[in-house]
Length: 238
Image (cartoon, rainbow, N blue to C red; front, side, top):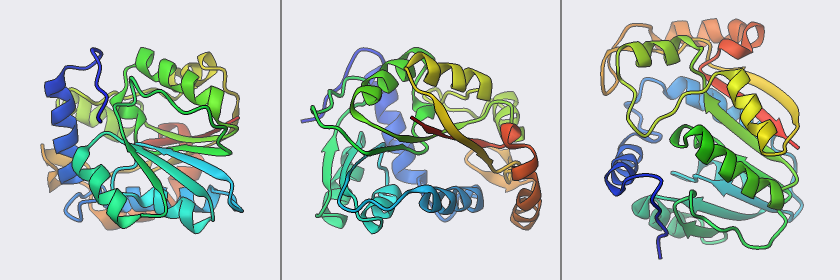
């Protein structure tokens, strides 16, 4: 049974689920090249599991669940969208998939060796994110987490153009680091992905202003030089 709460209106939750069902890993999303680079980076950073326990929060289409299984973890995934959760159950029968609103999710008394929170923090306000991370802190030894960066070109653009959906929160790197610190974590590693994003003139990712070839070329250099200005900020927490 799906758990819901009073922190977010049901209409907003439904809008969020509808958006991600349509756009998550959609080949028509011009941001795909940057997300693909993020996924490759995450896969390289996941250590070998050797049947250890891993928890993936906000499992979406299952990319990170797949990575964890390939790294030989015993995987539990938590996903809000009912349709996405059903697809995950069918696609990854070897994983344990739970459908829940993470704001009211009560984790089992299990110690996970690794928790992944990739492209999920944008759906939580600062207070909600602190509360969620405090839960994770009690059950996980290590966390891989990302956030959308307000200080990036993409973050500034979508804010100025008012493209940002009401369920999306952008974080400045310093603000995000303070949040994980409030939850009791220490930062063991940090990086940036996507200094350039193929931003679009219109909403719903229409009319690209920056072509994908330029994004890929520029990011080979700029991601390493200016990680705190990248579209996606990556942290490993301990």
